[in-house]
Length: 620
Image: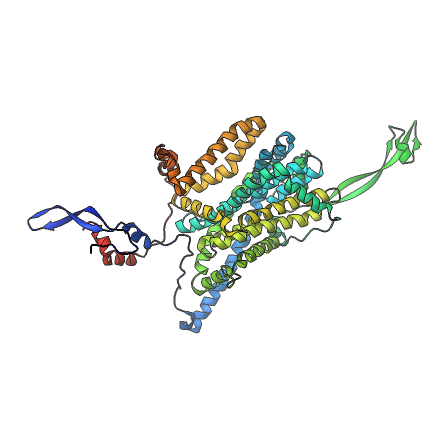
C-alpha cells in the first residue's frame, strides 16, 4: 500500500542483513524492506509495569476440591503459620527495641556533647542536621524529642532553636524503614517496591523541611502558632498514657538490658553520669533531719535556729535515695563499659532483626497466596465508590495514625508496612498516606507524654510536641492535599527503579543522607556560619542549576543551548551509573546478585513467531 495507516507514522526504508543458506553458496545478502518506525513500541507492549501489584496465582486445588483430611491439614498449617508470623513479628519488634538501646549506649556521651554547644544550635541548618544525627544515633524519635524537651525546660535551649532540631528528628526517624527494606534486596521487583516505599517516607520529610525551614527562619510560623495554642489553654500535669506495645515487649527486653531514661536526658543538660544502664529498678526517697551549722544569719529568718556549742545551728530535711531492689537483666552486674555492651547488643539485635525480617518476608510470601492474598489486597487498597473515592487516602491517614498510636512507635509501624509493600500486598499509592498517618500518630503519642510532664516542664514540653505535630500537618497540606503535588510518589518510584538495577545505590543513599552529609554540615557549622554559607551556598546553587537543566532537557530542550541539551559532553562517569557499577561490583563480587522471577517465555515466543514485523527485523 502506498499510503500509511491513519494514526501511525509513515514507514521508512532501512537496510537489514539476512544470513541465509543457498545451494552451493552461503553468504550475506542485503535487501530492502518496509519496517515501521513504531517497532520499538511493539517491543514495549509486552513489558509489565514494575510498580503494578504482582499477579497472585492460586496454589494447589481449590477448597471445594479438597476432602476433609486435606481441609483439616490446610487449617492446621494456616494456624501454625499465623502463630509463627506473630512470634517472628514479636521478636522483630523486640530486636528493634534492643537496637535502639544499643545505639543509645554507643552514642549517649556523643549526644550530650552535640547538644551542649549553644553556638552551633543557634544556626538553624546546624540544628536540623543535629536532629537527624541524634535520631539516627539513638534510633528513637521519642528519645530525641524528650532530650529537646528537657533542654528547653532547663533553659539550655530556646523554643526557636528547637524547631529545626524537631524537623531533623522527623527526618532521622525514616532510617528504620530504609534499613528494613534492605532485607528484600535479593529479589529485584520486591526490592524495587520495598525501597521505593521506604524512600517515599524520607523524600516527604526532606521536601517538607525544604519548604518549612526557610519559612520558619523568616517568619517563625511554627513557634508562634504553637505558642498561641499553648497560651489559649490552661494546662495541668496529668497521667502518662499507657504504652501498649511496651507492656508486651518489656518482659523479654527487660531481661536483656534496661536503660535509665532520666540519665539519658540529664546527659544533654550537663549532668553526665558514669553509665546509663539501669541497675536499681525499685528505689524510694527517704527524708532525714540533719543538724547543720548556720553560715549566714539570714538563714535564721525562715527557720528557727538554736545554739549548738559555740555557734548557731538549724535543722534541715535531707532527701536521700534508698536502693531497694536490683534489676534482673543480663548486664546488671557487668563490669563492661557502656560502649562494649552497646557493641554486643548491636551485633545481637542486628542478627535477630535481619534473620527475623527474612523469615517474615518468606512466610508472608507463602501465606499471601491465592484467595487469601486477594481478599487482603482488596481490603487494604479498597477505594470508596464515585464520587467519594478521594476519601480513601484520608481514611488511610487516619488508620496509619491510629495504628501508630496503638503500637506507640512509628518505627515499628513503618517497619511492618515495608515488607508488605515489597511482597505486593500494599500499593505505593496506598502506602504513602499510611506513612503520613504514622507521622501524625507518633506526634500524638509525644503530645500525650508531654501532658504528663512535671509542672515546671509542662508548657515547654507541650509546645515542642505541638511544633512536631504542626510540622507534619503542614507537610500533608503541602504534599498530599492536592493530587498533582503528591511528588514524593513519582520521585520514590524513580529512585526505586534505579536501586533495582544498581542495588549499591541504596547503601550510598543510606550512607550519605543520614551520616556523611549531616556530619559534613555539622563540621562546617562548627567552623562558623560564614564558612557554612561559603561552602554550602555554591553547592546548593549548583544542585539547583543541575535540577533546572534536567527539567528543561525533558520539557523544553529547544530553550537550551545545543551543548546543554544532553550531558554527553561530560565524562561518562559524571552522568551515568554504569562505570560506577562496574567498579563497585568488581570490588564486591561476594555480594549476592538480584534475581528476577522466572519469565513466562511461552508468551514471548508466541509473540515473536506470530508478529511479521518482529520477524523481519531479526536475523534468520
